[in-house]
Image 1 (cartoon, rainbow, N blue to C red):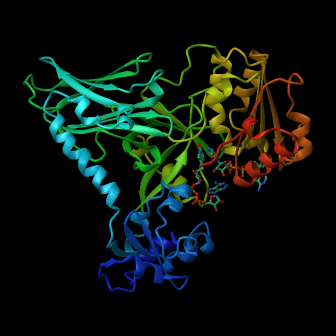
Image 2 (image 1 turned 180 degrees about the vertical axis):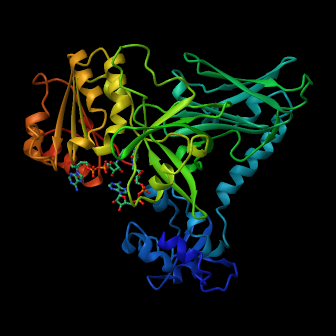
Length: 489
Ligand code: FAD
Ligand code: NAD
């Protein structure tokens, strides 16, 4: 908030009195001191000296990129942060030398698109090199009422978690996630379509169909005009995060400071957040875009062994702790039912296959670090037959802070594979259970293999020191890196 206030104060933060200049690499490199520090991010140069004392990671972290192109470092640490908005008053100008290779790629992709968006897709011509032959492609056809866009991923086992479609007004965006890459179809459609969008996936052959309903029964001469990133197959981290506006439909209390927010996706959106992944919420606070990550949960734990309740494809549930001085959570708490908030595509490195081969699953959670464990528990107990034991070791400050305690205890009674252990760091004197913070002795007491050589997966999530210490203790106890998954940003 102090930084936002400073940017709104009208002070000259660049030292250039509002002028924007072209910056050469040589010029950039001269501004490499704390009191005169310029950094380039994605071709734009910022004077970050006034921001030094506000940077959450500290001055030294920012100085790592002083006088250089800090894009890679920025992306590694917090690529979701909306620096354009936060640093707009610090903008010095553009780099004089542009990233030629990247621009060439985009412009050639766009010109190819113009050729192919005439209704007949010349697949072989576009995919010239052998490397490109492996990348997905698309085609489209129409009937009187429907437009069908077909994406050939050329990969097996494409499931609904990997297909994200957004169709609003005349804009169609379809992204297929393929490991750390993604393929994008992004088109400004030639004619209007209705909000109903169907997505069919032929998992075995890797074919995805996006079926749109024409608003007018006219014959389309072309599918539309290509938009940014259309028909590209690239690293996911190189794509900007895509957001859609979701409606807040309910807000229920979980504990004294934690609420379950239910958001509704727009009608034209097909999005499922995979187990172990998070989304970013974006909201404008005091005129500045603020973005924070949250991990979707289920509306409740799977007590009845029914269909997993997570995949209605319409709602996203978020369990969020409201901090009394929290910038974002205070704003979230003030949202009214019916208000909108932007939700990003999912991100995260967790793979379900890590659980599918395990016999013992151990979940270490601190506070809201419980959130990724919710879908994980559901998945493990309803879909993984080789699991013999599932144990949640849940660290909280007080009894009142324990999230879904009742449901967890019921689940432990219902499913003999599941066990829960609560450990409090600030218990009242009546607490008869375990006390303390994460430690080597607590872990050696509770983290155990069910058999001497059983395959184990240990997942850990909570405050950063909790996770860091936990991973260290586990390694000291002899667990290998492959046996540990730490949830981080
Ligand atoms: P800030 O304005 O950043 O901080 C204000 C004050 O709040 C701090 O001084 C401190 O007292 C307290 N505070 C803020 N952040 C933390 C923190 N991280 N740990 C301890 N105290 C803090 N949170 C959820 O509630 N539910 C989730 O599902 C969830 N998922 C996450 C997923 C990922 C990948 C990550 C990295 C974080 C997740 N978080 C989650 C935390 C969330 O992103 C925010 O950090 C949190 O909501 C606080 O934001 P804020 O702007 O309100 O607080
Ligand atoms: P909290 O402050 O209520 O602490 C919960 C418990 O964590 C404590 O009782 C204690 O046992 C342990 N703990 C806290 N600080 C510790 C420390 N310094 N050293 C060792 N143990 C410590 O927790 P909270 O306010 O609910 O915060 C939850 C945290 O989990 C946040 O930092 C949030 O960012 C993080 N989180 C991360 C993800 C993710 O990375 N995927 C998802 C959800 C939440």
